[in-house]
Image 1 (cartoon, rainbow, N blue to C red):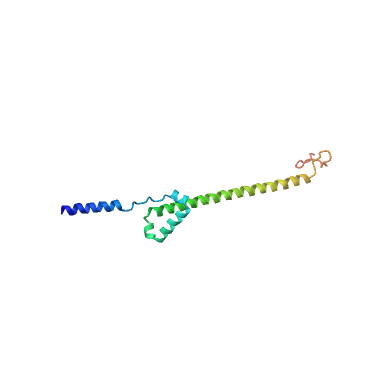
Image 2 (tube, one colour):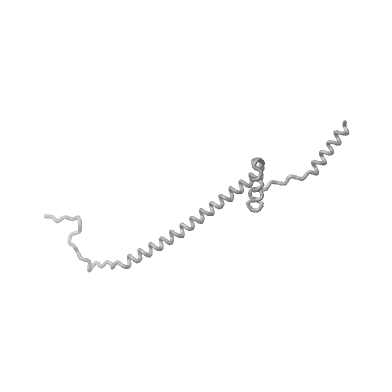
Length: 127
């Protein structure tokens, strides 16, 4: 009996030592750095929905997708702001050109040749 117990423990320890070591899960940053691996993990998680709910790598790939989406959205917002600023500068230049053209077409004010209409408006003659 004792021999069977010792033998069982020895076989169990040997099998535990010979089993393949668990690989570390890929982090979200590692998945972001390697898009091919990210797609591979995503495909594996999509194929097995039950395991995906508890698998650490599936959680990391979801987190990596959220990080990538947020970064893409920030880049789009920056591009939109840059385009807005470019169009605003273009519009200001057009308005400035129009204002300069309007001002140059008006005759200059000459106080010596301007007609005088008498009393300034809003004043009534005194009796």
